[in-house]
Each structure stands twice: as structure tokens, then as C-alpha cells.
Length: 128
Length: 278
Image 1 (cartoon, each protein chain N blue to C red):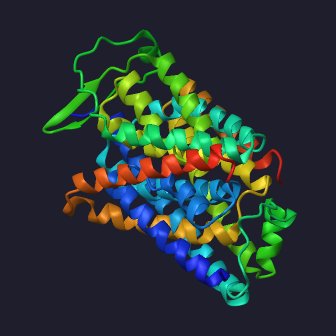
Image 2 (tube, rainbow over the protein chains, first blue to last red):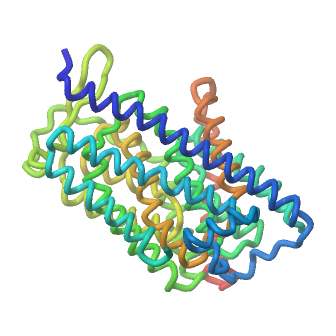
């Protein structure tokens, strides 16, 4: 007989696994919509990725990306889809904080909060 | 080349990379950057940004399949993620400071390591190891389904594993790869975690590690939507297809072939880095 704790762990993990896959598919869907608009408008333009310029300021942070997205710019919509994708592992970490808190495992609540802060620092630190 | 032709070609190449990566278990990300820089002449910084995004897609996309098997150990994953995400922040910051030549050379070395590691026989699972004080205090020991019942394992060498993970995170942030090979090395060889548990836990960690450097890459302008779009869609499609085909195919020769391709790409990256062509 298995201890009950492992069943709940597995249950949370299953829900989370499906949630992550849904997040990835949603992101792929948004990226595809952006791709259609981008390719229709700029499909015949030449590519020049051998020169590194860095992205324009509006594609480097959430506010600019949302603004471009609402203006139905293809590249902005793609970038928004990529943000959704970057958010999927963050959601996983947030869920783990809740799961550890429910098990009253305080060391792991602290560990997971540490990982979450590092992610927030990277995502919010310089760009938003 | 026009944007349309470029996007289609990059999509098809990424699809193949993702498919072969999933079939061989080596991950497609490791060949993406050399593919983009050597054949499509993309600046290595854009290539690293696009590759990093696709790494998150494969990791999160495969999570549902992995968790059903019940092998991954979220405590080991979370404890080691403190090391990998800190390393990833360091790596992503280094990436913006070092020259593209140095990036290419480090990349070549990482490719060679990954090819060597994929040919190396995995360590024999040692059973009944004594519990380690650190591992016990941190509740890292666990069990996994094995035939009829569950087999328990005791994690070893926690500080060494943690340090290796910091290195894996730095490499991931620096090169935009999952560094799955180094993650499995830390867990399999140093911490003596059973292979199935290390590979599935490593998959879970790869996405979180990559997300830690993705924020920095985005704000520095390394993630180009026009390039990341075909790469991400291609790799994701290829890896999902690969996971479906995996059970039906005999992959020994494919694995060998892919390792040879990785070695060739490694030398090409090293050559280009040393001669300053990148």
C-alpha cells in the first residue's frame, strides 16, 4: 500500500503536466497567428540576421509587446506568444509553492520561493 | 533569401532537429545554434535567444508525458533549481559580455562533451547505498515504480551535485541550451540517482532554468520573434512527433549518427570560433 502523500503528489503533478502542455499549445497557437500576419506583410522582405542589432525597445518588455500585440503587429503577437511560453515553467514553480505549503514542508516552501524570486528578478528586473 | 523562404527552411530544419533530438534523447537544442550560425549565417546571439525559447517549449511540452510515469522527484528538482537558476542568471549576464568568438568556442566544447556523454554507458544502478546526512535532512531520498512495487533510492554527494548543477545552469544561460547532458551527469554520476529519475527530473528542471535566463535575453534584445517563431514551432512539432514515434523505432543507429553529426558541428564551431569567422 502506498502512503497517501505520494498519491496527492502524483495527482497535482498530473494536473500540472496537462496544464503545462495546454500552456505550450496556447503559446504555439498565438505564435502561429502572429506568424501568419508577419509572413503576409513581410514575407518578401530580405533577411539579415547575420548583423546583430538587438531588438527594438518595444519588443524587449511586456508593455511594449502588449501594445504591439493590440496594434495587431505580427512580430508583437509572436513575442507575446513567446512570453506565454516563458511563463509556463514559472506557473509550475508557483504550483509547487502551493503544493509544498499544503504538505506543510516549510524548507521546501522556502526553496521554491527562492527559485520563484530568481525567476521574477530575471523577468521583471530589467524589462518591465 | 526572403523572410518567407528563410522561415520555411528554418522551420523544416528545426522540425528535424526536434524529431531526432527526441528520438535519441539528446535534445534538439544542442544542434540548433550550430545549424543557425553555420548554415543560415545567423548571428550567434540571435541563435542563442531562439534556441533558449525552443528549449522551454520542449521541456514544458513533454512534462505531461513524463509526470504520468511517476519517476520525477520534485524535491530533488526544486532543491537543485536554486543552483541552476542562479547559474543561469550568471550565464546570461556573461553571454552579453563575452565575444561571439568565445561563445562559439565554448559551444564547440559543450557539443563535444554532449556527444561523448551520449556514447558513454550509464553507471550501473547501485542499490542499497547508505543514506547521506544532507540528503536525509533535505528529504531528497525517494522511490519510483519498478515492476511490481516501488524501489527506493538514497541520494549521495549532495554538495558536489549542487555545484555541478550550478555549472549546468551557467552553461544553459550562456549558450541557450538545456544542458541536459550535464544535468543528468550531476544526478546520475555524482548523486547516484537512478537513471529514469534523473532524466525525467532533468526535463522538469530544464524549462525552469531556461526561463531564468530568458528574461535577461528578452530585455537585452536577443530574442527575435521572426527567428524564434520558425525555430520554436519546428522544434516543438518535431519533439511531439518524436515522443509518439519513440516506442516504435529502433534508435541505436540514429543515436550513433546523431552523435557523429554533433562531433562534426563541434569542430566546425571550434574552427569558426578560433579563426574569428563567427
